[in-house]
Amino acid sequence: MPHNTTNVTSISDNLTAVRQRIADSAAAVGRDPDDITLLAVSKTKPVSALVQAWQAGQRCFGENYLQEALEKIHQLRGKDIQWHFIGPLQSNKTRPAAENFDWVHTIDRIKVARRLNEQRPTTLPPLNICLQVNIDGEASKSGVSPEELPQLAAAVAPLENLQLRGLMAIPSPIPSPGGDCNQQQQPFARLAQLLDNLRRQYPDNPHLDTLSMGMSGDMDAAISAGATVVRIGTDVFGKRELAKESR
Ligand SMILES: *Cc1c(COP(=O)(O)O)cnc(C)c1O
Image 1: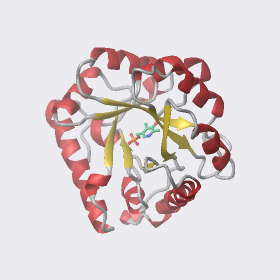
Image 2: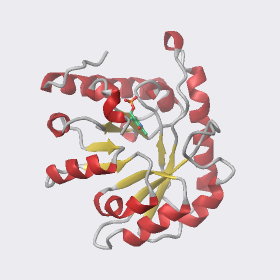
Image 3: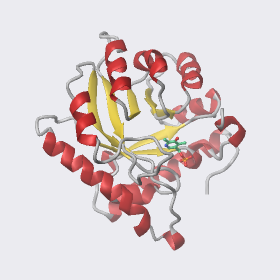
């Protein structure tokens, strides 16, 4: 169990435990754990917590709220950190995202992709992009439907300041009673199938290698189904205060 306090030892211990879980889940299905990137999701957490994770070797961080993220990026300038934006992105907020992030995981509209492409400084490498898929077809969720995906990919692929990397999804939470994660695997397996289709659509794109899926509660199922990026908040940094999340 992750600790709730944010002292140095617990974040470092939590990271060690999560890395071990990644290794175990990968081994269980014959995958190389080095093919799985741990994204530490630091939304609502103070800069000091990110520094502790960084000191424990963590280099990839995921943030959901743009303003909060920009403050952290500013304060941590000079540290070798890869910043991933994983929250909903409004089309009038794309410029700071294009200028400050290495990855955006949540593209579900061509308008947002076009703006990021226009606003990405050409002095930086292309912005890595995942297309977000509404894998459960929930009315309230962001993400394109599997049916709309090929069309969105076709619009994003030619944008030269973006690099289409793969797919992202947030399935609705399903419990894993007694560690049985068969149920949890189904939406992840569907996302993996969609990435396969996409790779067939773009056989010449060697960068289409990313399945961003799996959070603290369903990471193991996601890895069995082929996740290459797992986005872990609670199990690294402890529980979040809900009040802070609803802004
Ligand atoms: C908050 C969040 C996470 C991390 O969730 P935990 O359950 O705390 O691990 C992962 N992905 C996205 C998109 C999130 O918003």
